[in-house]
Amino acid sequence: MKRIRVAIVDDSSFVRKALSRMLGTIPELIVVGAASSGEELLAHLAQWEPDLVTLDLGMPGMGGLATLDRILAWRPIPVIVLSGTSSREALLAVEALQRGTVDFIDKQRFSLVDFEALRPALTERIFALAGPSAPPSVVEAAEPIRPPSAPRAASSEFDAVVMGASTGGPLALQLVLEALPPVLSAPVFIAQHMPEGFTEPFATRLDGRLPFRVRESEHASWAEPGAVYVARAGVHLRLRREGARTMLLHSSTPADLPHKPSVDELFESARQCFGARCIAVLLTGMGRDGARGLASLAAAGAHTIGQDERSCVVYGMPGAARALGAVREELPLDEIGPRIAALLGRARNGAGA
Image (cartoon, rainbow, N blue to C red):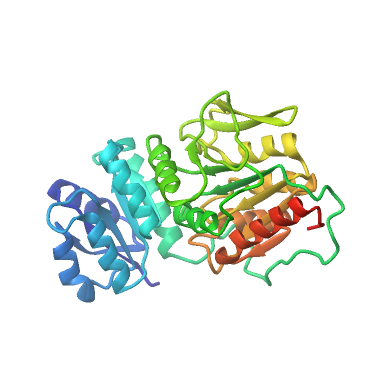
């Protein structure tokens, strides 16, 4: 059995030793090195040949972001960032996610001396990112799904776009949104798995890069046509239709779901609001969140799109949706944005999709 080779980069000696001890107890993993700085890691990359790196961003010297850039230039391996939720750390983490980091751990959610809490969170990510390409619960890759040639029997107009993502999602969402036209004919609602404190800087960063408004969701606010809303972390985002307007609502229930915001909760509320007049997209991510909601939207006649396995960081969520028969089209990441733009354009022109 080939073990996953992990390198640890953190300027704290305690953190390096704690992570090394914790990961060293897992037979499928091997810690090939622990570096106190980006410079030390880069000096040993060729020798250690890690399959995955855990990276602290707030290091002296060249710093975490420059280290990340150099790692990915050396080889495109998964990098998991360990970050806090201070304003500065959250901004650095969001920047890292959109430079190519695939996931991060919010250090303030865990105590590094409480191995029982941290171990499953970190090892689940390591196995998903550097282990087998698809979780065992997901069906094996098959031929891409393309839409039937017949036009839609449902309405040819779309009142909303909803998207869900998890691991690898921030960069994937940015690439999809960058491919949309500067003036959108419908609002876009996004549920991205993130800890509290990270969705606001994520939305702010997107807002500065895109031609349309991107905002973190606010409770009991009205959606503006052509704006993009990122669900606030720590609560579920639900939509409510009142006449021709859509209200954004936050809810703390169900409290027992593993993710807040839940993609399933957003998708189910979109089904109730828009039915067939909705485009729903499920992107890269671990687990099954969004699969049930996408199936519900598909049954209502919505146009459903799943990211294909080859372009996913983790095929868990879109793979689970495909297994349920919920995916009308399965597309590579670089085709999803143009496809949404084409669907919105056809809706505006009154043609079938």
